Amino acid sequence: MPILDSTYKPPFQFKNGFLATIYSGLVRKVPLEQQRERMDTRDGDFLDLDWSYAESSSDTLIILLHGLEGHAQRPYVTGAAKLFNQNGMDAVCMNFRGCSGEDNRFYRSYHSGATDDLDDVVKHCLQQKNYSKIILKGVSLGGNVILKYLGEDRMLPKQIKAAIAISVPMHLDGSATELHKMKNRAFAIRFRKHLLDKLRIKQKQFPDRLKDEDLDQIKTLREFDEFYSSKAHGFKDAMDYYTQCSSLQFLKNIIVPTLIINALNDSFLSSECYPIKVAKKNDNVYLEMPKYGGHVGFILKNNVYYNEKRALEFVNSVI
Image (cartoon, rainbow, N blue to C red):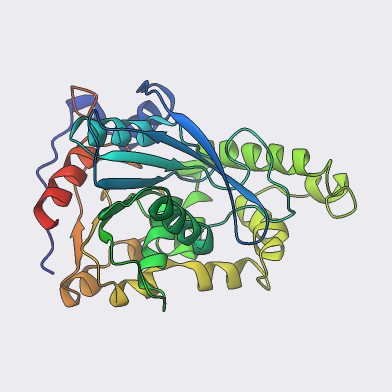
């Protein structure tokens, strides 16, 4: 598909990608009334789903996936849910394992390529209500999960009509390299702290597998992936995890209309995360690369972000 021209024009101060990212992650608020449901996974764990609804009965559902160490109450999730609710669609926000405020049951948790849980959620939602249209929207890590899910060798439910992926680190090794650069030091420290805090909670369940001396040696995100993300989820090491779970390699197989929005000033993304050649060859992959936006920082003046507005426009154009 030809590359899409972007019309995004941020307020002047948010042309700075760092400020846009910080404001969107720490300052923005989008209150939303949600109803929580706990569902069992195929392997005996659980996922918490947070639902919000259109005013009248809807046959369309958007399933929203958050990013690394996010949850279903983050504003980039509730903002999209609220906008789609206001436009006649139900929304369910999927909390990855261990991200809903309660640790999950197993040593494993979630990672950038964990598509089985998304598959379980899609099937569960279709069993709960006879939706005729399913939309998938993921941010950052959640976007990578969606793109990988759509491009894997699986039979997709016919109800999946469109997908949107925002600020996607689709080449995980490249993005890990970017996150370890000085420009992203503040973000890397914050992510590492949250991830280690989660492991220390999990340590209470698995003290023999998570020893203090091992956790104290984890100084970088890559070391975290080497010690936990890879080993806990069946990969040989961090590079094996990055290689198998990067969604870039799956884009060529996508048959569902899919919009990818990656800002050119997103400091988390490497050059491989702008798949121009793939998008030109696959009629179902629409790639938009705004000049501004940082990482999930597509700020507009009315608290409806550009990526949310574009997601709704895209859905209305293809279903």
